[in-house]
Amino acid sequence: MAALPVNNDEVKCSPAKKLKTETESDSKNANSLHDNEISLSSFQVKRVLQNNCLRKQVCVEGVFEGYEGSTIILLEKRNFSDDTVSLKKEFFNEDTTLRKLYSNDIYGNYECFPVKTYNGLNAMVIHPATPKHIEKFKRKELYIVDETYELYQKITLPYIESSSLSLEWVYNILEHKAEQDKVVYEDKNEETGFVLVNDLKWDGQPNTLKLIALPFKKIKSMRELNASHLPLLKNIRDSGTKTITEKFNISPSQLRIYLHYQPSYYHLHVHFAYLMFETPGIYVEKAHLLSMVIRNIELMSEYYTKAVLSYVVAAGDPLCIKFQEEGILTKVKSESIEDCK
Ligand code: G7M
Image 1: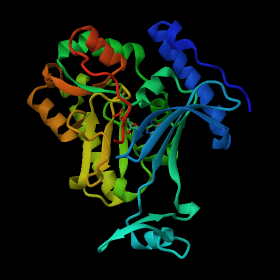
Image 2: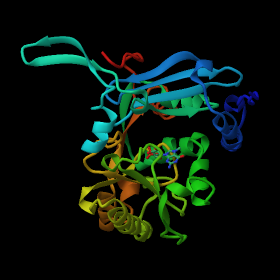
Image 3: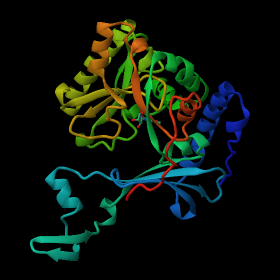
Image 4: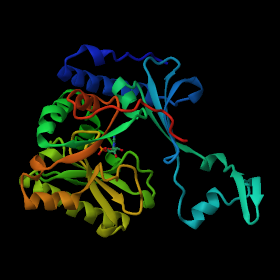
């Protein structure tokens, strides 16, 4: 296996150069590890970044033999099908038995070992993982920030401009360089157009439907929205719901359509998810319903330059450190890595 270049640029470059270098490096390296079949026996686990029992996920950092740089692997148990035919095929078959652990009265506890084909895990692999990626996946203490527009300008915006994650994957979709088989709708209008694409995390099951709308217009986040963006937002709402109804037979009233603040990626995007799927990231301190965003702007064009937007920051995140340095947040507890107690 070919050795990969190490990304040492995190600490040395100016913020603008750092972002550019990271982007170039990301796309150059993306072809290397991911082009080959990956055997996990050549992976050495260095540490557990987080173990989330609710989401049934474990995230580890380690190294692949023969490849330079850290790798993050996120393993996640899969969702069950909800149709009887698939369930019968996958679990209620002659190869799957229950092994009794104990029973009490009418209650029995068993272990179940489904056959290999139906016992897969979803795995996400990031290589080479930058310190920023590693920070993102590490479990940390959380704090709520009540961000005024003044705080946004003083702290958040400089952070976004200097050190946010690369948007290469977004431009690859918008420029037809990637994931074209996952695109379900495209409106090419420069002002009001967008691409509706399957979310990376969607496994394709109707009961966990998750898509994202990526506008062609460059808007960093909800904070920048005003009345001039209403045609775009309404087009995303109307064309997005129409497409999903036609293609996936889900009515607009059964969709949770929302934006994140703070998002992970600062190219405005709107999430479309099946209402009955309690996907992560729908909490009040993060998700803003598109309908409310539109209504707020209709009431007041400058709503998002006046509103206090509250969100969670995690210990050790650059944004959290900035808010701590400014005395906006005070640290009272040390970092904990115990997830599943
Ligand atoms: O938290 P935020 O609102 O920024 O959410 C970004 C969304 O983009 C998440 O739901 C991710 O699963 C999704 N996403 C991230 N990446 C890197 C990709 C990608 O490469 N392709 C697609 N289709 N979705 C992505």
